[in-house]
Length: 123
Image (cartoon, rainbow, N blue to C red):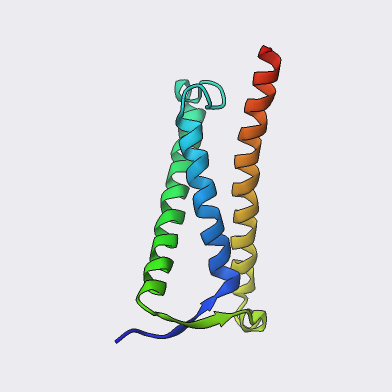
């Protein structure tokens, strides 16, 4: 017996979209030629990489959980009703999820842009 709950669009979609972007950032940032400088040589660089890897793990685990619930038939439909979040201030959590998505995408795009700038300077 599985519990049928609606797919909470406003909280789950940003997690699902951020997971592959954050994982790609960690993979690209860990490659020596592509990494933003020599991050592994100082404390702050290592701390930022560990933070990025931990966030990637949490996002990937969350996405895997959502997909496994979907695969087991645990979602009865998709809920777009934002008014359900107003009563208990959980709209703050919704805003946080979407801000996290924006931050992850911005971080990834910054890494890509920085690498292109460095490559142009070398030419």
